[in-house]
Image 1 (cartoon, one colour):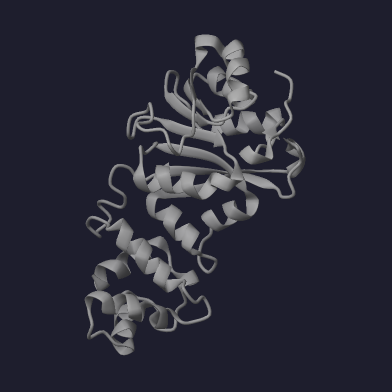
Image 2: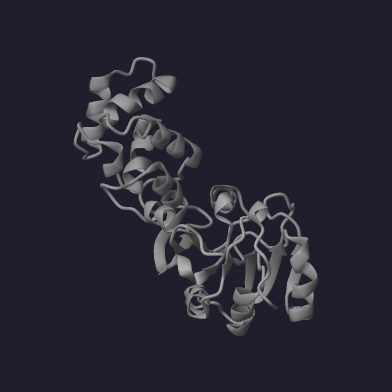
Amino acid sequence: MSLPIAKKSFGQNFLIDELAVKKIAIAAEIQKGETVLEIGPGTGLLTSALIRYGANVTAIELDHDFIDPLKEKFGDQINLIEGDVLRLHPLPVQDGAFKLVANIPYNITSPILEKFLAHGPHPTVMILMVQKEVADRIVAEPPQMSLLSVMCQLYAKCSRVLVVKAGSFRPIPKVDSAVVRFDLRYPSPHRGEGMGEVNHERVIALAKAGFVSRRKQLHHNLLPFARITHPEMDAQKIKTILLDAHLDPKVRAENLTIHDWINLEAMIR
């Protein structure tokens, strides 16, 4: 398939680096016959690699102009669906029984993460191409944590696979990219770690409160959140909770690990 003209409305940048494509497919650790969901197969370069490594590919393509060329190229080798992955329901994959591999348009990175991490269907592994800056935030560790890293690491073990330079795409974007692997904590994140079941929505709400003002110490930011369920809460009690959680009372949100957030939520609950 010849390289088409990219459409800005679809956020298209076509990956042309075959070595990068190979590394993405290898990172997915595909077992022969395993179901792999690919979002936006486009020209089919990554699709071909996934097939070579034994995947049973279901590909969802929004751009109608790619449908006939993909059918001609792959025939019945893949299950090709035309549509918007964020609107299709139900998706043709089973919860916890597929891997997600995709070079996604960067303008849908956040909704893709939210859908497949928080809502489902949940893959066992996600391999996603994102902007390098976003990848850095996803895999960050203290003292560089952000709300994004907390949200992603709550649901998955996140690791960077490789950096992909801007010149590996056509048209060439303004920024470099990176591939991130998400090993989902499925079906019950953090079970068996001495914390019981995790209330994901409350942990994320707590983290949102914690990061509302990055320059402030955490106890200042957490007080309004804690008073929702504990009206009697004051700054000193928050500091005591932080001490009980083995944290410095003057700590800031970017210094907490994902386990610190889970522990704090359980203590404030």
